[in-house]
Amino acid sequence: MPTYQYACNDCGEQLEVVQKFSDDALTVCPNCEGNLRKVFSAAAIVFKGSGFYRTDNRSSSTSSTTNTASTTKSESTKTESKPSTTPAPAASSSN
Image (cartoon, rainbow, N blue to C red; front, side, top):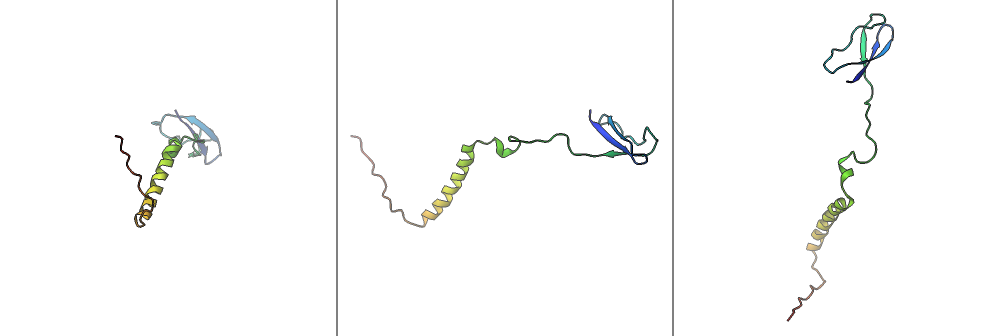
């Protein structure tokens, strides 16, 4: 069950209450019977370090393969316009 923080608008009393999600919010201060308001704060869970992003779980070979493929594609479009000067290797016959 979560813990909620409340503050009284009249006396400034701060209190924490453990409530179910289905419970109604408190509206009356137990100290002075004034109006309570719910205090919102930062999340209690903070994910730090590696492994929390989609890119953290990929191996370095996968990301380098992707980069190599995109580089090869851009190089092949450049070489298509220029004729190749390197002769093709001769096929060897094994008789």
